[in-house]
Image (cartoon, rainbow, N blue to C red; front, side, top):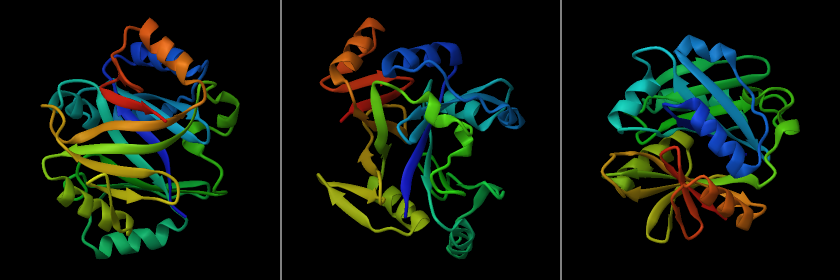
Length: 247
């Protein structure tokens, strides 16, 4: 089984973005992983149903996230994290395909592989495994006690690039899943969730430009966005350099 389990964003001002998401989604707390300081970052991980939204922010110079902020001229999408069943076999397959791994961690509870963005472009693609599968240790043992009240799970994501079909082929190879055409756009569909690939929608270059969430109270979320003076178009809200689509 494959499941879109977490989206990560990068922000320059962590406190501002945290307050925006708390207000927008009905959150009062998030998990903080202090170990992430080894990457020169601080973070929060918010529980949206049984999926997760992470925001990272550089606290040191010359981090991958900091370079992304500079390259894309501000906040935006950073990672797409997909849960898999057998990460050891996935690693063997990925290495056989010539896809480079830039980070790996294997523990008895949770494991992860981050793929090289030049081999799988548009965002950092990660394959993660949990024991048991319902757990998500990146959000703490008690993540279910901090769930958002206004939204359910993350159900989709969208990557823009100059060559969306070629980008989709790289992701298809990385996750060993076929490309499906949806509304004329290539798409990788997991057992739960998806990644869509579209042409460039703005001048910021290739990147994770949007994600979809199931709205529990769409009217209240839109009101919250209006109170925060966020840009709203139909059922989409711009925050932290990405578009959030309410489903």
